[in-house]
Each structure stands twice: as C-alpha cells, then as structure tokens.
Amino acid sequence: MIAKYSKCLALNLVKLSFISAPFCSIAAHAGHNDKFEFLMAEANHQINAKHDKEVSQRFTAWENLMHHSLGKTEQEKIKSVNDFFNRMHWVSDKDLWNKKDYWATPIESLIRNAGDCEDFSIAKYFTLLAMDIPFERLELIM
Picture 1 (cartoon, rainbow, N blue to C red):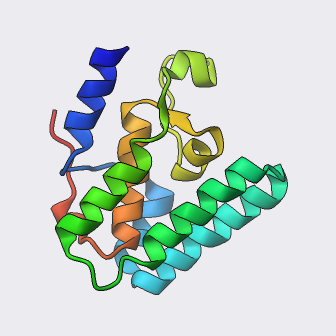
Picture 2 (picture 1 turned 90 degrees about the vertical axis):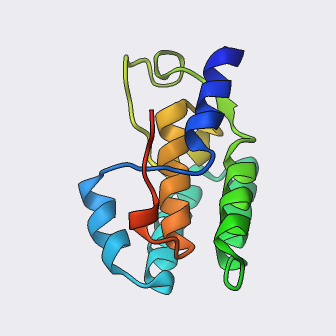
C-alpha cells in the first residue's frame, strides 16, 4: 500500500487531469466565483444530507482553501491543494466502493475522507480549477 500511495503523490504533485462532462463544461467556462459557488452548493447539499460533523469540518476546510487562494501564486495554490488532499486515506476502489474501478467526485472523496490515485487527481483537478489555475496547465502524466 505504501508503494501505491507514493505513486499517487508522484502522479498528483504538479500535473493533474480528468475529463468529466458534467464538471468540465461548467468549470472550464465559468469564472472563479461561479466555479467556487458551484462546488460549494453541491458540497452543502451533501453535508446537509449527511449531518456528520467531521464531514462538515472537511468541507469547511475545503471551502476555506479555495476562498483564501486569491492572491496566491500558482505554486502556493498547488502546494496547499496537495497538502490538503494528501491527508485523505488511500483506499482501493474495491475496498471503498466494492468496484474494480470507480472515479469518485471530489465531494464523494471528501465525504469518505478516502480514495485512490484517480480520486486524489480528480479532487485536486477541480479544486485547482476553482482556484483559477487554467485547465491548460493541468494534465495527468503516467
């Protein structure tokens, strides 16, 4: 498991990517506030459905991460996003979702506080988009 987690960190350190029709069309064409509001509206919906204090705290921390990114350099944003999501637990899709392969949304990953390499990448990708990192700068290298 340590080797897999290390691979996740290497894949996610600077270049991230994911293609998702529902999110890319919104995230790629919306401004910072629109992307931020979209993510937080969905997060609040999920928090209200869960009524879990730890989940609520993770979403509040995620909101603060994005909200306080204005004025930071690209490198500072990347580091803060990596630090934030790398605290989640690495768990295989089989153990977490009972599926061979499942690409979780950032919200699903935050609710479970866990994911695998793709889940980390997806969460980081959309968070960095919401923090005004251009999608042209985000790609996955294997």
